[in-house]
Amino acid sequence: MLTRLSIRNIVLIEALELEFRGGLGVLTGETGAGKSILLDALGLVLGNRAETSLVRAGEDKASVSATFEFAQLPGTVSEVLDDAEIECEPGEPLILRRSLKVDGGSKAFVNDQPVSVALLRDLSAALVELHGQHDDRGLVNPRGHRLLLDRFAGADVAGVAAAWMAWRAAEDRLAAARERVENAKADQDLLIAHLAELTAIEPQAGEEARLAETRAAMQKGERLSGDLEELRHLWEGSDSPLAAMRVAARRLDRIAAEHPLLTEALSALDRAVIEAGEAEDKLADAAEALVHDPAELDRAETRLFELRAIARKHRCEVDDLPSKMREFRAALDSIEGGEAELDALIEAARKAGQTYRDKSSILHKARLEAAKALDAAVAAELPPLKLDSARFRTLVTELPEERWSASGSDAVEFLIATNPGADFAPLGKIASGGELSRFILALKVALAEKGGAAAMIFDEIDRGVGGAVASAIGERLARLAEGGQVLVVTHSPQVAARGRTHYAIHKTSEGTVTRTSVSLLDNDARQEEIARMLSGAEVTPEARAQADRLLEDL
Image 1 (cartoon, one colour):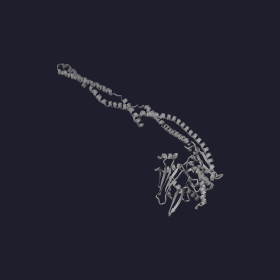
Image 2 (cartoon, helix red, strand yellow):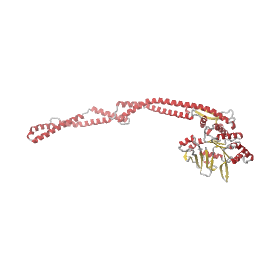
Image 3 (cartoon, rainbow, N blue to C red):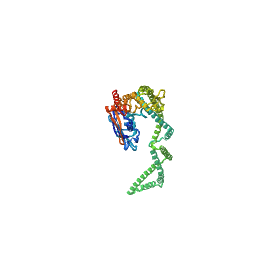
Image 4 (tube, one colour):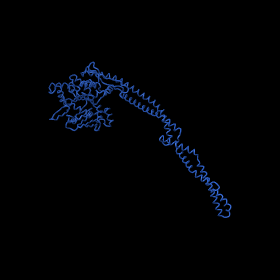
């Protein structure tokens, strides 16, 4: 609940510290005393537009802070804080603060951490319901009607939301799979052509290196073949060095026995002949080894060029061509597999959609039943509030599929007809300020104990009524405040007498300076204030006696 409101330099308020309690708190004061200033200050800290006119004359800046305390943080508040990464331990107060400069600049804080004004607005929806003469939020705004009806019904909105998320996720997976399959099909002909081309050439791992080595060897043989041919001519024939050496050896053999040195010379010559013969054999072997088929060289070169060309086409190395073949085969296989997966995803999306439809249908029926019960509960509250001729209706409309959401397949709106025979219309369009406030009160009473904001504030809900109607309003406000917190700005003594706490708003003037102040009244001061409300400017004994009766009757 709201426990403290601190205001600095807002219009007529120089400095004000207000402490609030649970139950029904009433704020009273003469017309023009500054009750609206309090609401404007509270609106500022809750994220309303920062108007520079709020800054007190002669001051550079203004500020407002509001302190809220909870036994346990409301779920919505906790979610907003978690998203903003703001810590608030159990039992720790939640402090909202807003500062405003006279030049229009403003800053917002939550527990002294800078935040956006949008975050204040997100928090305020769960912290305070402010119902005034020109309220365009809360119960008047149809966007919140579905949530209120669901709370009243105790409906399984979470189950519908989970089914919606599951359906959306299934549809997203299906859409992604369809896109993959369509993209793959668009490339299918090209994949087939690439695979056929690679299958025809059948590249092998390491083949480029082997071909390059073979080609280099054959090219080298071509270069050496001329030299070997010249050597062959030198070694062959009757006038070759080897033949001359053999002739010399035969002649030396005939005379070698004549002298030892000739014998040694013959031995050396024989060795030379033998080695020359070996060299001749080696040359023959080399010539034979270097002999190649020119067609084979052409085939090797052609194969090598083909492999390198197709590798350039696919922007890869020649040795990567076998893996490219496997990649293309896998892509083609995935098209068939993708179509099978697509069938499974279509079925999963269908089932998820049906689950959502089933849960939404159950929720729709629960809303229709709750709408009847809410209409009856509100109808019972209207006559005591001087709205005897008014009628209330909760309209539940099934939406077209394109407008379904995590909240289900319905739109919900609260409608009223204020006169017999009049058509039903939205709350804010046909209800006057006083009627609107009383309708809201009737709704809040009917919706009591079904959840809502931590604090509710009503601004002059009793305008234009008195006597029994004002008493009925006060009784319902007190009932609504049981176990919670309701603050009401009122001119009605019947309503003021119902308050658990009573604050009086005063305006004082000192020369050219005007100030607004607020004080918490004790029992005696409270009796005097209610008497003033009963009698006007001059408080009479009769008014004090009547004030006593009002307070005693409670």
